[in-house]
Structures are given as C-alpha cells and as structure tokens.
Length: 406
Image 1: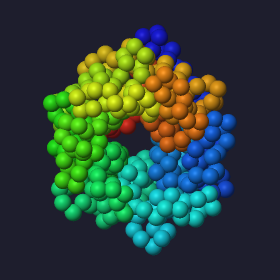
Image 2 (image 1 turned 120 degrees about the horizontal axis):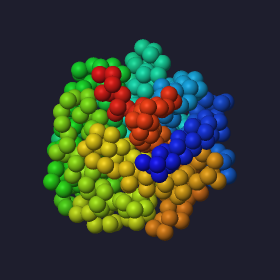
Image 3 (image 1 turned 135 degrees about the vertical axis):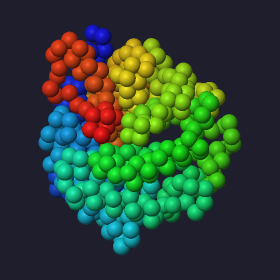
C-alpha cells in the first residue's frame, strides 16, 4: 500500500498542519467567540452572511473530536468557548424552546425558525463536547437538546419529525433524520444509556421502512407527509454522498447494538459505487435516480469524505478491499478540492469538467473532511502496526471507538 500510505500522509499533513489551524485562526471570531460562516478564496471572512447555528455546532463537534484524537489539542478550548457563546446567542433567545436558526455578526437574531437539521447537529456537538471535557453540564445540554427536539418537531402522523417550524414546504426529508441518528449514536457513545440506544433503534427502523429500498439500496431524499416517495415512487432523488454516509452510520449502529446491518447497507454501498463513483478518478457525482441513472454531473467536496468513512470501515473489517478507490478519492480531494494554494481551505463544488462553481469556502465542510480523513488514517495506522512501528498521533474515529470502549 505505498501509494495509499503516501496519500494518507499528505492528507494528515494538510488536515493537521493547514486546515485545523486555519479554521481555528482566521476562521474564528475571537470577539464574538463564534466560528466564521465562510471564507473567500482570498482567505478572508465573508462578513455579509448570517451565522447559522448549524455551522457553530459542526465546528464545535469537529474541534472537540480533534482534541480527543490528539491531533489538535487546542481545539478543546476553542470548542468550549464557541459552545458557551452558542448557548448565549442562539438558545431560547426569543423566549421559545429551542435554538434560533441564525444571527448576524453583532449577535442580533436574523432567522427565528426552528430547524431539525440544526438541532440534530447541536445534539452531535454537545455529545462530542461532553466526550472531550467529561463535564456533566455538556452532557446535560445534549439531553436538553434532545428534549427540545421531541417538544418542537414531532410529526402528527406517520412517525418521524417535520423538517422545520414554520415548515418551509409540505415535503419531508431523510437528511435531518440521518443527522439525528448520528447525534443519537454520539450521545449513546458518551452516555451508554440504553434509552438512547432504543432511540437509535427507532431511527434505524424508520430508515429501513421509509427511506431505503432494501432491494436496490436506493436512499430516497424527499417524501410527502405519509412518507410516500416524492415526486413519485421510482422517481426519487438519490445522493451518492448520503448512501456512503448512511452506510457508515449503519455500521456504527451495528457496533453499538450488535445487530448486523449488512443486508441493508451493502446494497447502498454497491449503488453508490456502481452508479455514483468513478473508481479510477475517485469522482463522486451529486445526484442519481432510484434506478442509478445520472442526474447531476456536478461534484461537491463532502461526498468524497463520506466515501472515505464507509469504504475504510469495510476495508478495515476485511469485508472488502477498497484500497484502490480510497487512494483515488484521497488524490482527488488533494488535487481538485483541498488545493495547496488555498492553504487549508477548499473548493466546495465543481462542474462536470471539475471547474470550480464557487469562490466561497463554507466552514460547514470541515466536519465532513475531518471525520472522513481521520477515519481513513486508520488504514495508515493498521499498516504501520503490521510492520511494528505504530503512530502515536493517529486519530480514532467514532466507529472504531465504539468497539474499543463499549
């Protein structure tokens, strides 16, 4: 695996030496103790956009995890400061339960909506922060957020939750439910509570019965209130990045519950690879149909990070050998997205010819890149240990830490 190891070493150097310091530096506003929403390709904050609570949550989780792994110990102080500021600026500041969606640079409320996607990431963030600090107050905040989700978002019929209040449309989406599943798994890891694991089981059942076609592995994105596929059965939108993401989450759930997820996740992985990924270039497209037909040839950064997570876990477990495609994905990330001239930043979206379609670097991508790359770095550690020279600084991912600790 010399070529793969070289790609992994480049990725670790970029992550630890460039990306984490950049977003802890220019990507953080020390006056407001908030993370910046975006940077331009010039490396300067984009000041005219609101600060979403979702971005704060993702960065808190990322820097908490970076502190736990030992890759960026200073991340803990940063995460704690941002968490305190987030509570003060977003939590119940309009007198209602839950967290407002966004604020301006001076802390004024911009959008008061309650968003399930954002609350799911807040759950994930405080679970990670509790893991990093060991503080009961952080764990209690995670449970507070879970209680607010139950209070604000339950759908009146057919199970699951509504996407937001007020509702933006009449559709329901799998995506916020996926991140609620992730948040619950993170909370279970730090708490060990059987009641939280039972909540994970409920989300797993929802995915199996509503989101995923068990025969084809198609994970549909949009639904009506009664969970009928939108716009019609067989015509649903499928995102390869979410296929990879769910595949990884299902293995995490398998580790936590002891319930084999192969029958449901392996078709998802096959579909993501056969219809959504070029195995030679590592390119992951943005959208396919339920039948695998290509719908969007554009290609965002984050699905490649999710592919790293899913394919690494399968390779590490010996269920398959995806080292060739993992190498291709890592090389694509370093040359197309995480370009050296951006100094720890990234291109978010490219067109079908891999030309950038935006000159903005969204902070939200760091969550994907951190967890994707640190998962993949287990392959380097495994090879090093095989030859008797393990790496003390190697990170540990959420999935593998479950089996080690629980």
